[in-house]
Length: 296
Image (tube, rainbow, N blue to C red):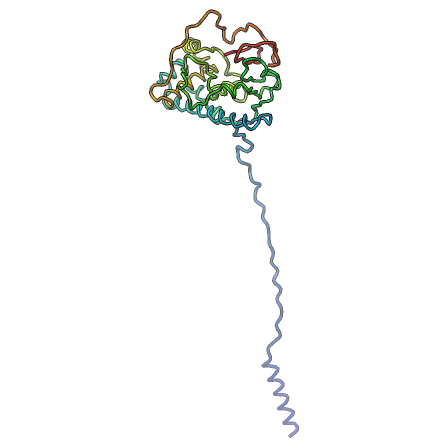
């Protein structure tokens, strides 16, 4: 009997052991993250481009505002001049009037540089570092060998230059007025002095309206590189296409008078290469890097 009980207990213990769940074994999961480095990101091809015309800190808030508006209008003027040539080519009477038989690619390029060229190596300033703004009639000047990338805009410009919106108003005619009547065309002239835009190729080969027309007939190759020709063409194309469509405002050129200056080839007085202070200068003058004083 005792053996039977012991056997029963043994069987019961075995059954209990078989029925009991096995203890859980904790599993450890290890996550391995592998970082694969790709090739270094290549900078955009135009990284570092300067898209705005730089203005020096010497310009106060009013001057900055007026300069920005003038620059915007200069770009608009150059942009339309470019587009007029792209549309009509040398079939345009306005084109042949100013550029003669010259190919269209070069003036298109000069206008396009003003519209879309990089502006990193140029600067407009207002602090009169060379003293020329103190001279009567000076609206501004390129600094020449003092600083080839810099252009000074004198106070006279802010009080006398007109907005492109008034083109063909105020009694203005293309033939009868100077190209610097408008801030847009005056600034167009000034940026062509800076090597980044004019590349020391755009120069003064003829100045007055009638001289510009004569240059188109006698030397088209110089006409497409003549600063005043580019200004006159841009103004007339804008006047005829935009300001007074189909009409424009050419007007009549004044009769030349004795004593008119021989533009750009000789000067009655010269100054050093740098446009430093001089004792006297005619109205609306600036100095070229070769020492010639150009007056309009």
